[in-house]
Length: 441
Image 1 (cartoon, rainbow, N blue to C red):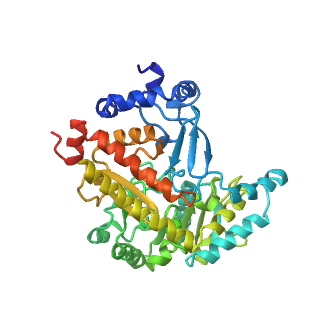
Image 2 (cartoon, rainbow, N blue to C red):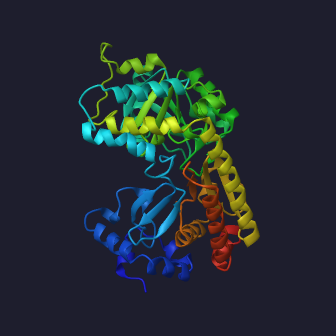
Image 3 (cartoon, rainbow, N blue to C red):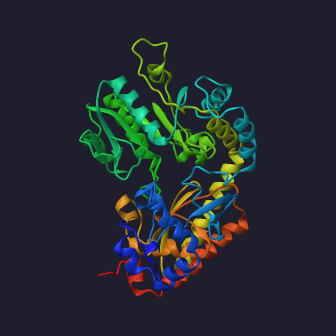
């Protein structure tokens, strides 16, 4: 029996009506402490969450701790973690070397109102690693990095307008989330649209090497080079968002694709699991923020480049060498093929898009080329997510998977087997099968 603790003003009718009852009941029955904790949280946080992606119906599993490639919830249930905090935990949870590096920091001080060696060391490591980064400046998140990159571009060009991709995501700060008229959206992978969407009024073009939140849709290298070329033609600043993609190549995706962006935004893995962001790129653009430059662009932040994040980030980067990246990408390719094969065998097809070690599972066999394709079969997606949690696989409501170096081949097999079990269960729900196969009325 579902209790009132399992309801929320933001829950969707689709999820309630299409997820098989047995999956919902199994989920709820095994998580009484999560249900109670969710109810308690609603008294102090709207909808019991402070991050949009953490809510799903009937209530979110509440996590108690992370151990390598596993998560443990407040009811003592264990999960294989293939979320890894949306790409930021590239080495899994509580990675020992990162934890060991943080120990002395907690005793000596986590943040100072001054330059410190840990800050310099991380900056040096990033400048050495990423060819397009000549100088960089730290922020506290990817959202803040996007905001700073835009400020630099507007100062450098004297323009206001911004072009981003349809389905592109560059953080939860205005103007990227406000729908303001200065934002122009261009269809991803559509070269023909660039002439009209990147113009002489454009200050900056923000682009991801693949659409992350938009469904993990890989960018066509020809398209990405056309974006860069068009930005150069009109004098706009080309900003490559490597917040997620840095993990996919030893020197970043800009280098592997042969791109030369003016600015690069970074975050997530460069903090080793702690909040961080950065803007790097051409020295002349970054020098606009220098205190040694008259009329400089002021950029402040109480926790910018704090000791803890810099130390953790440096430890994480050291472990993310070419061999680790190759293992991650190869493992992701195998998992993608395994999940698609599981869907075919079950009779409920799925399509897996992939960029390096980041994947997205989409119900249905139709190609996923645009964000609108990634939004199809919402009910099937919600049912698949909840069913996987019941099977001990911790993934995302939208189907995104992010691998970590902590995963073992056996755990990856268990993830594939979890998909097999749930897909076989869902194929017996006519509404979900019709939705996934495009036969829904």
